[in-house]
Image (tube, rainbow, N blue to C red; front, side):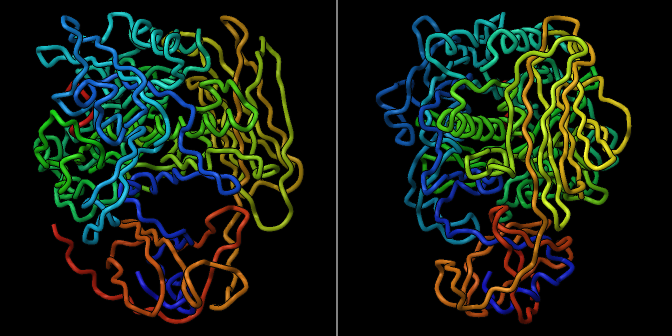
Length: 608
């Protein structure tokens, strides 16, 4: 998109424009997904990229099954490969390709001569990276000789304990789950919850599954497909939103025509609207009524590493570089989140929290999430939390709390509460324009299909109060071990955050709280040649335009036209890159032009 700086106010005034944001120039290609998750975090010029973090991936296998002769995107960072499925002789290679793709989305750090640019313009070459490209990999190969996943241990404790104890992994990601959707809390779910209860700094991610279908043909995805261990209380369950590859022409009914018989899903491209949910992503709630998934990340047309032993059918997009391939599924969304967890954990460890709990990581990740607006009318999502996208799409920049965030964001990894006890702290809400206060409480609950320990989150400001997950309702959530207050226009002054132990049935209960004050948009005028250095030359800015159909990043300069997608934009908002910066509003006129036509399981949770 190209427009003169003085024309930007007219762009912001268009009813169809949702958001305009100043961004730095970028050249990386596989940050199409990472950009949607705001997964680039830095402090005083130092980037956080997962350094010092060990992530365990349990999947089909890894590339050629060697820690030394590894795919170039992993050179020097494969710590250990473990054969659980093919043990006589031990083999960890990946003829399937699923595991290598997943590993790349977590921590791949590759280069491609052809797969560059922004995903819509001709390829220029560049980097193809996961969300934590400096983390190290442990991979457990679950693939058996018959192609099944019989390498998954009978007791999941035996899956989690070796990498936790022997390798020092504190993040474990799983892009697989039950074949049957909608199973209740079961033995596997109990084992997962038990392991996190016993090892409270171990973060486990599970893909929500790909059982989202429109069974009754009403144009809406049916609920209650989250199943078994993917609905466990103490994990991070990840659903899939759409990627941002509008040039890929595949529609949902191309993939599974009987699953999506009616519009608006039938005929809808799978990767053309990052504001929307992927149709195949399994919806909640669990059979016990818990909100799931917890969060979502892009999961359609995700570019990542390709095993050198695997074929590529090009079903989800054509890669011109044989070292990389496209794939789709909640399998692809989950490792992107696992990489974000690694970066989030790195920021905590390096800034004074050496042993962050899984509850704290989950609370911070959920508290930073952005509400996913949806792409259809009526929306397929709704206000958070909901059973399509949970608490929203990951925004890592807002999840992380750095020393520079003092007074604007914070967290506590708190000790146990016993029956009837409560603990509180205060937050100062500044005077002036209305603020939003967002607070998230998470606790690692003892295993069991219902809540064993029930904590309450209460936020008081002025003469009012809000309760976790209840909006303005005076009741309390008695089902979920994640509670959030998202208080828009919170009264200025002192806000009190209170955590109360309503019911403790088994053991005293530790917990974690994350909070952030969100600043409103405050439009300002910036001259074309101001003292504020935008690093793009006189009269130009690097901006990001977000609409309901597209997210486009371009240098805005020289008054060249950009074609706005007619009839496909929503709302208008202008906000800064960082919450302590003023946004940019500029003057002039902009004439929208017509939009040209764009060219065109394990039960693994990948492959749509």
